[in-house]
Length: 279
Image (tube, rainbow, N blue to C red):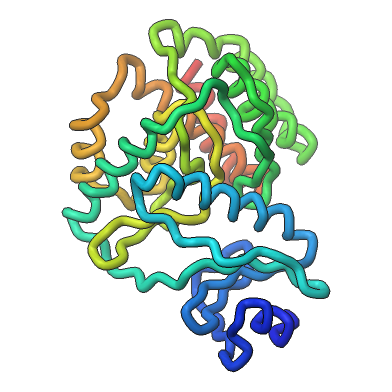
């Protein structure tokens, strides 16, 4: 059980009672006064610290609303991350359109190199962000290759590794006419990581790095939760590039492989299907 006396004292909320709330798939989630808290074992400190840094990185361009980080630390056996509490409502078509437009604006924030200044996590999996000048090399080594090696360690060998290795060799084909800029990415933008607050979109739970903007769009299509208004608004600002449909499957493969490594063989067939489709 978290040391609530120490945590609430640090947050200036000693008289507030923590209440469990939904949304904590990986970490426990709480409301304490006007704050939202994630808690986990002390070993979660680096994960929470990277998430806090990612939220601050996303907030800096002021393109889209991001929960404000209040504190991040460890008390006893418990690590925690505290952000402002946001009352989330049901997104409307207008909110979806605003999200598309604002995500496109967020993607205008760029850097000179791909990656980020620190590693973070995608779910509970390490996400390597060592900087690179070459997007194909970055995606091959830090994303698909990393997940395939992890899958081999988890016992998924055979066809997955053979076909996956062949795909890694053929990656340049997908980028013959596409040279992406290193854009600021949410990194894990599925339907559960955004919402509507006072009619405005808000995004959270990121896995931030600088990469191809198409990766964020690919993730939105993987599990649903985004309507036509979102895609139309994004495309009005940033029209799709040639070959983006095939690259969408390529970028989705990273997340499917991660789910395979996190949750097991239920995702093996989907991973193999994507690899075969790409080849």
